[in-house]
Length: 295
View 1 (tube, rainbow, N blue to C red):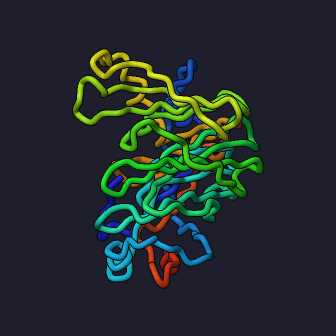
View 2: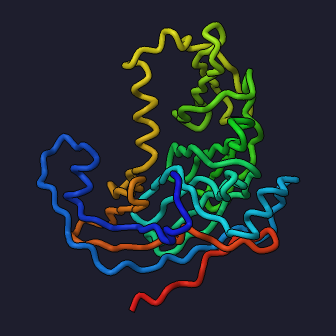
């Protein structure tokens, strides 16, 4: 999601259950109700407390120091009405300088960075198999796709351990989807597209030990990728911008307006929280601007 320096805030909204059920394509047909939005409240953000090393990307660090940095979000993932994540990267004009994964445990009022950042990478996928165990995938994005780093949590995303790099047969492979069916079995779909019909393909990377080791098998040559075959991947990209918690709560990131909407409870109420887009960068640390007086 591209954002400019003139746009300073994103917003998190809490909507009604009628809005949630309709937006989630429930089998039930309920009237769409969109209550009037209240005055938004700034959410508090806390970033990784240790200075971050950009590993020699001096031109990016110079831009960060001169212009600041901004959030470039890839999606949202909800556990329930209280706990959710927003994830993506932190960027400068030249591109992404590091990944970011923010967690809220109070329905969007405050967010804390809980996963150690990966240089030059963006967090692009998350998946949980229950309320405790989940995975997050970071992808190198500077001047094209590069290494993929997998993280793992067993405490509802409070802490994350590095499982290591997920191997690809060719470095430019780009992940299209990541799903885990249980604690052991997972799959990452990767597209290899370098403009060569002989080698272009979509492959499956599969694990049977919770992401510790992976095996790659070819799925389809790109020449056999029909519109119907590719549709699930396009839907998967769109699905990252909304997430339904285990209790039916709906969190939504609207790419066009940089707006989050959250169905927090079963009453016809709305809460709106704002996340700052433009951030400060000083001595390798990132900080949100001071909260504004909403009056």
